[in-house]
Length: 251
Ligand code: PGA
Image (cartoon, rainbow, N blue to C red; front, side, top):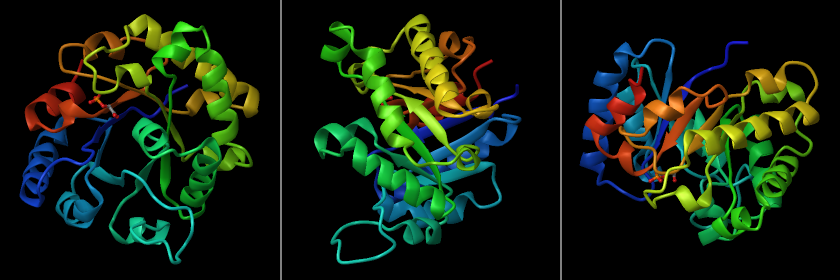
């Protein structure tokens, strides 16, 4: 079963406006020859519209790094789903490890945001992953199962065709300690098996599952050769045109 291949860059709270535009320009120019791979960039929210305008007509899509679940309201500092769309974003990151562990986002909040994204025709990239201490205690599969169960509670199979999962072990994010291809592949295989239990038919077979956590030009090849890793979510190495292009062009 052919699955979408997605190569995504999460710029986090980095770049000035000018740097964001230069980075987007370089990525659009370099991403034209990547065939059927989807390239998605997640700039900081205030630059999303300008970056999306610049990317129009290229094969680079733009996403928001976070979003509130309500359509509108008295939620100072938050970004609504209609605002995400107005900014030209097709994707949104939901439940990134930094949202969960720095800002205290719960599985319940993640679920509300997944519902809101899909209802508003925005593709959620739902991030899950275990802490180092959870892995060391042998709790990885338990944590992943709980995060998946909760994130997708009440989401019908139809919606799953427009959903992406990103496996990002917390111990690998921003640490330089990438998961080995074997470790990542094990987790991805497990995630797909849980999704097979949650959804009938071919839902789990077509679901793109991305790996994230210290992906760099020098470790992408091993990850790309596995069977269940359908792309990557890149932080640090997506902030330089050359390193991101090397990653998205992996053979
Ligand atoms: P990193 O970040 O590539 O810098 O480890 C990945 C992420 O947070 O999505």
